[in-house]
Length: 335
Ligand code: GDP
Ligand code: MG
Image 1: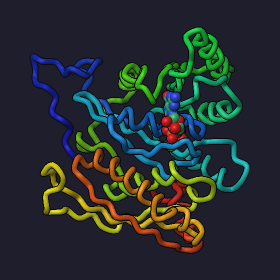
Image 2 (image 1 turned 180 degrees about the horizontal axis):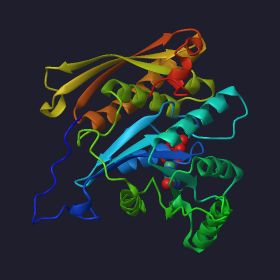
Image 3 (image 1 turned 90 degrees about the vertical axis):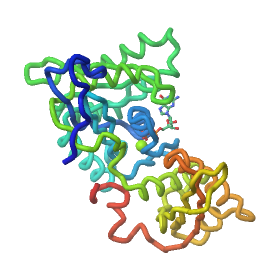
Image 4 (image 1 turned 60 degrees about the vertical axis):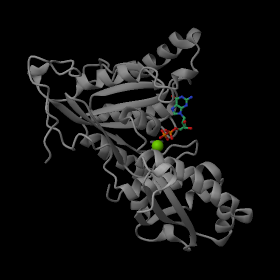
């Protein structure tokens, strides 16, 4: 176990510990839970201050339970991103809900995300019921608040208060779940949210080194950045049939542009059918170049160095039916 960041020694109190030095360091696991596409991964990146989870308008982008870590002088937040929850209509859906239930049972706190710019719906009610059964402390983030005109704000808040107000405790009283209007996209309200979550964390040790932002390996993060670009630029069956494998990461000794060091990344994009390979490569290789250049820019931001990226596309029929499939999708394998 790694040591916590040293707290500033007296007489200077720790600047970011609102509860004061006497209560000690706080740490805990916070699950980000909500319907698909409400902005869980976008919020995770915002709260961690760095891109650790990929996002896209395509539902089911998040395939595994990813942890994003944020450490301040007084506390450590370990956020757990989860695949979106919806009412199960098939076995896969059941597994997904089970996985979400397991996650909920393992954390100190749940941050329920809803799309605050829409009226509360049945999908939200389903999740609210799951959380009530779990009896875990819950904070609710009304995301997409950037899309709520101020004239509508009271109406939207009332709609969610009503959703949460139904009596559920054995004594009939509703639980107290604080509401936070936020925008994961613009950052509106997220500092206040973080301060409020910090108050709710239990006293505990620092579980990751303070500079850590994710529990994923560098390779896993880089692979996800490539998959994100595939999701952004392809349609229909391609996104769900793609997996990315990082073959090698090589430090390039030669100085790159502007004298910065360079890293070479060699990666293979797996697809299931030849027709998908044709789409991914595109006419004259144009699609693969677009995907590669988008991913390279994201990698440069992540690694803070210039990156040379080479992508290969390989057809592996039915790779999703291999035994690793559900684990790869994050529906019940290892984290
Ligand atoms: P997830 O499936 O819950 O992880 O959702 P994502 O984080 O992948 O976000 C889905 C889409 O919603 C992306 O296109 C985001 O850019 C967008 N999005 C997320 N949060 C907000 C927000 O607060 N406001 C707006 N306008 N868009 C958002
Ligand atoms: Mg996600």
